[in-house]
Image (cartoon, rainbow, N blue to C red; front, side):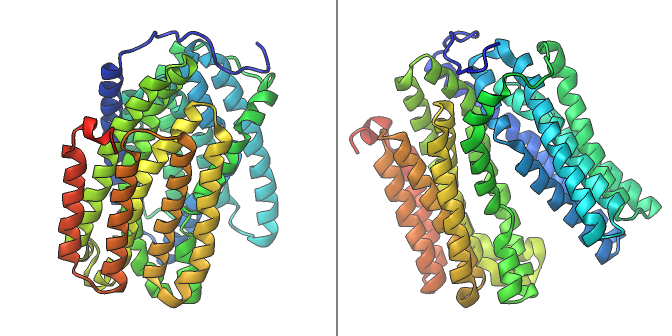
Length: 472
């Protein structure tokens, strides 16, 4: 195996027609969304049971453990899952070599983090070693999971099933916890077991498809190629890690931070469409790039972006029309106060739904540094705007900071991708509706008018024939 591996070989699965590729992308997005929606609903139900069955202190510790696990996982990923999925898509015959190398490397790095973290925590946070051990186990189970391999091999239905199974395990564990009065450590163990089951389900089906070769030889070149993706993961996680909520609590009040958390959780769920669209298109776009089929890649991406832009604008329009009522229905009357922030966050969903798949198309072409540029710019801008806008504007400042950062990241990725048909129409639609959202929140303009205009633009995007967009 050569250490300087860069996939340019013939595609094992053969060239597919553009129509077939589009059909597969739609199928994959549907499969991933179905599995994740089941998982989210079950885990949300489990968190409700944990919140009712545990003391407030223990429930807080569970969430701290989950956060620690997530940070450790992202910090130790090294960009390998995204790069590995891309490489497997282009050269599936190398899946076993890649799977073994990625797994060993991630476990070695994560193991080092865990050892250091447990040692330091014994001095700065004594008495919580069992809790941190469960958080570490949860991170290890996620690190060895073959979710990236399933995406690269286009086993989306398998990934959806495994994800849903994890949700059932968490819900079942929460019911048991409620019956037996578990503490925080045992509750966190439920999440660790669920992640272990997800990994086991994936490898049960993936292992026979690959000949896994464990080792680290040849990883030097791969780590160098993955470096921009590693930095990108940290940058993206920085504005997905609820830093705005922390700043709200520190500079305004814990109550305001709590109110903002409700629309922010919905915002994270709404972003899944753009993320899964990116995951679904990566294998096909990577094969197109490896076979110099740039025209096919551009057509696939262009047609998807119109639908994704329309999704984002429909989401924004509906939030403008019914966001306040939705927050009250789900979380209670006090959360109507976060309706303005919800509108601004929904505008961010529209930018992310378009921007993230374009960014992933850069990974498919091996342009990892350009992906990093968009991710890092958005991360830095988000933090700076949070610090500048949240103290005077509160929740609305947090929502505005997020949307501006997402728009900047999307614009950079779109610019890096290069001109494509319909780009101007999409950018104008997103810019116009985001401006309307800001006017609604800060100038107290009619939510109903803005919502109807935004939905009208979304419908227009879907109804305009692609031939007309070609001349924009």
